[in-house]
Image 1 (cartoon, rainbow, N blue to C red):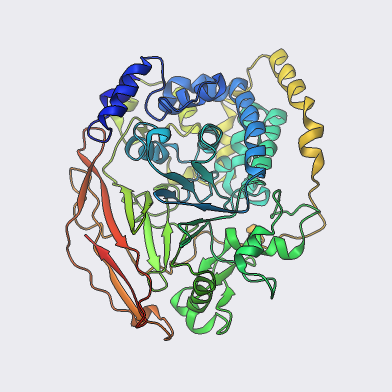
Image 2 (image 1 turned 120 degrees about the horizontal axis):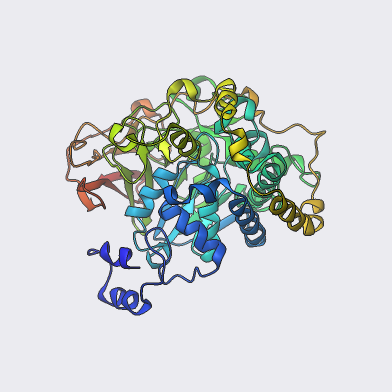
Amino acid sequence: LTHVRSRMGRNASISTARELEALGDGGSGSGGEAGGGVSDEVCQRVLSMFRDPHRHVDYLRGTDFAKDLLDLCARTRPLLECEPRVVFLQSPCYVFGDLHGNLEDLHFFSDNVWRLGMSLTAGNFLFLGDYVDRGMSGLEVVAYLMVMKISMPNKVHLLRGNHETRDVNGWEEHYGIRSFISQCQRFGPEIGYRVWEETNQVFDRLPLAAVIDQEIFCVHGGIPRSVSTNRSQIEDILSVPAVAGINPPYEHERDGQQQVASDCIWSDPASEEQEKNGVDPESGFGESLRGGGAICFGNRAVTNFLSQHGFSYILRAHEAHADGVAISKGARVFTVFSTSKDHNQGCQAMAGCILVDFEKMQVINRSPAYRNQYIHRRDSISLTGMDPADIDTRARLGLVTDLPVECQYQEEESDDGLAGHEEEWEEDDDDYEDDLENEMDEDDEGTVGRYVLDTRRSSSVDPTTTVSSPESSMRYGVNTKRGAGGNGMAALSPLKESFKEGEEEDDETSTVDAGEGDIENWEGGGENGSLLGCGTWRRMRASAEGDNSVEALS
């Protein structure tokens, strides 16, 4: 708690400071929930790991962590199963895109967005999915988010992405050591598989979408095709079972329900070329450049969806963008990406999030110049004197970043990397593992046995024939040419785009005015000074004259 108080700055009120003083020094620190009611030992161990993962390497490799993960899964499942497939929220709300096992960027948001803990930060927190794969810390990211969900079930909301399906996060042949199922094997084959399956049982219960202020539709991929003539698309999503496998489906999932859920987690905005030739002119849907059966949605689909439900914007994730946030479809579709690594976006890539606050949408992103407690391979001083085996162990836990390109996504490399340390990763006491397996078997009948995966049915989308993040359909985003200097500031150019209601919206004919504008500096922790770049879009509904415009405000 002393650490929290030292970093409060001007973001906390005097009354908050008094409450923290009254709690004493026994509470949790940065990244934890000071005064937030996180008191049980499992949650405290995970929060302690999140605050300083380098001090918890043995815990992360051991069966204690596996046991804690299984406990968190058992407690998270009923919470998610009781939620509707579309969650309705009020602003203020922070919205985060793909994390992909990137504990470092998640730690950045913890340090700068919820510096005093989520419980003491006003508003809701919405995560749009894709928590695992690609990054090396999928287990740690999932553990932290489950702790937050258990601690604040009505404040923290987790949606489902395409990587929260077995077909994708079990695809070890493609992602190698960066696949979620491979990372679970640190606990050994039997316990590792059980952790993977129990975590997927949690994923099966994640909601598919959210609506903020009855105006902003939030989803991982995009809007689904309608499967009923007498129901809206929101009602179609609400009809999806509370437990859905999707890829692959369960026996109780109907084909229409599987299609709706698959569209929510897989679809993309249509590119300009697709708008001309690849999208149905009436429905506005077509085949995605991603392939594999995934779909794309064009201007017509966006217009129909927003007008049918009275919404103004679509906020989604699913596509990598070096700027962290991008817009498309007449500034009606926002894409947010919250990891800056593992997607070939270059060393200047930023992780972004969006704060929806009544009439404003504010972009917050991590500057490439930002540094925190994580060790980077290019930082020779940090690695001086560290044993090579220790470096390798920490790299496998995601605590030493920037792995060489030749080590990424190659199965043969993952096999070689395991050769020298396989026995070390499985040195845990055999009796303890037997006890853990017995404890896991006690509730096996009540959880896994209730639902059966239908292996005879094919998935709506075949991940093995898809490509990640197709050629971007986003025309406008963050301007990184200004302010990315020594102070770590990332700048946003104001954007202005307008179109007339009733006309076919086409990105090529939209007018854009990119001015200089003023950028508001946020004070970030660390020695790099101002670390966040903020831009604000005002949310405006169409006027009676039909002028539907969105203007960026400095």
